[in-house]
Length: 471
Image: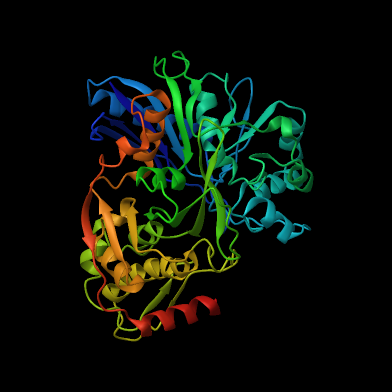
């Protein structure tokens, strides 16, 4: 027996089968389209996300004879998905977390931050809902009349997998909507009134692991399985890194880079960072985290590949960036700047160019720009003796060494860098009894590579921060 984990990310869906010893015995992946209808707008087709999920899981199941006994789900967070409760079809595209379409919110930002741990920013689901209400009255009428469900990607996938029988989300995903009270652990009537969102459209909030839902075989590849783990991707990665104790931290380098620190049962409100639910236990107790969200990491390397065409594959950037950036500075604000700047209107900037600048310098400046964004949130987290890393871009040894040098901290990379999917599997395994305790999980994904700090380039830091603040 094994666990099936589904990681519905920003550019595609990964699924894995995890055995009892923690090994990944099979894996599948299916991309889906990115839509950019206007500058700063990012949308997905929910039906394409669902099709990619089916294709990814089919690939995975075909590559092993180990039958899954339970399912864990992790997902891109904050993305707004709407669907008809009866037909499960979506009346409009999903508005992705990267989307920067703005709305004028005449709200008290400090009160919102106090309740949710989140600043007013287009990043979160709340403002995306306000945009729909203000700009698409026919779609909004379906929400108000109870025909249309509101959710994040986890809610949508569970609705599809269960044939519409379940409309749920876990506490970690709910805490990213900006409609959830960190203190009460439920949708906030005050916030729902502020943003004018009807409670009837929202999912029921459940724990991050336990007996949460069941699939319907006719709807989901003839699989009749319990869904026993759910978490937003960054919280799942924190769990997958076994960062169970207060002070434990990880950074995931995916489309963006996300640094999370476990704060235990304490809700810590830090002005330039996000406070969030890490996970909720079946007994209702919650653990919290501080988060520094930067919106562009691996996406910057994809831009070098797809936008500039200076590399053929993303892995090529490590070789191209081997030499110094020679004073070239890149601030990868391609979808605005996240923590600690919170500048949704910011745009990427490439400076310090001369006649001698070339693609090698730009590639190196790109890796330095990714690492500098993490550097800018690291000190706000308090004392961290080490940093565990994961995500696709963490496989880049040069990027990890640059990161260690800047932070002057040991960076540890586990054997399996798919920590989001692994975290979903761990949660589902605990929720189904496949594993009995967190202690049992500690040794399943050992550290494979360690990067120790070397030279700290103070001049790079000063020039990069100056450039970021000047955008």
